[in-house]
Image (cartoon, rainbow, N blue to C red; front, side, top):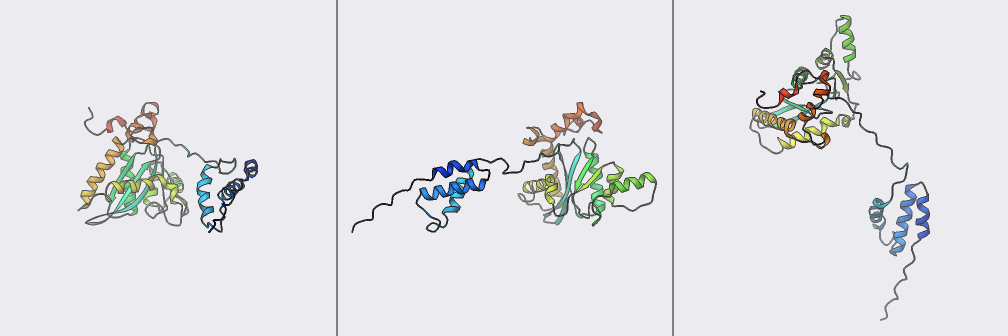
Length: 279
């Protein structure tokens, strides 16, 4: 039985590919490249249903960017040291559940972590006070979500400016314990937008990093065992872990850099906080 003669291969429509880049629409360029590939391979979408999808994955990454295709990326606003992101997460040991309060400096990446059996307004207040005492520089801003631990639900944002005004005028008032502590220590309290947790992304990314190194990797029989392990991890992170975002410096080394140039930002000499003997 005689075999059918091979089907002649049509020439690719090179003219359409030449004309397409002149257009400002990226979709037109992509469509022209896909159609050219389909004709060249003598395939049609009907005979090969997945052909078009496959070609999109192959051809699209090779297409040049067209001006106006993507919005310009905005750079994150830079802040001096003292801008802390704060949040709470749950962890567990054999004894039960604990609340992990996490704070990380937006600029120096210095981390401060505590474990508590409850996550109340009084606990968040004490956590903030210990954070203020732990860092050797002035904290000027804290960013939290709208949780009851940090602000009054439904208040529409932080009440710290109103609290400061009431304190200045000598008025009697009732205030959230965390926000009152911010006002007393001249700290600007900012809250994230509702249903926008990524705006507090620094601490959101730090929480799984801590969990991966502690509760997800090791078994802890007691709360005290986890507290000791967590303290060791945070100390190693702050004083020994070199971060790419800090150009190879540790958070502690980054903090020491502005000590000579901006001493007014500091409450203590950071060189005296290095673990070990301070002679």
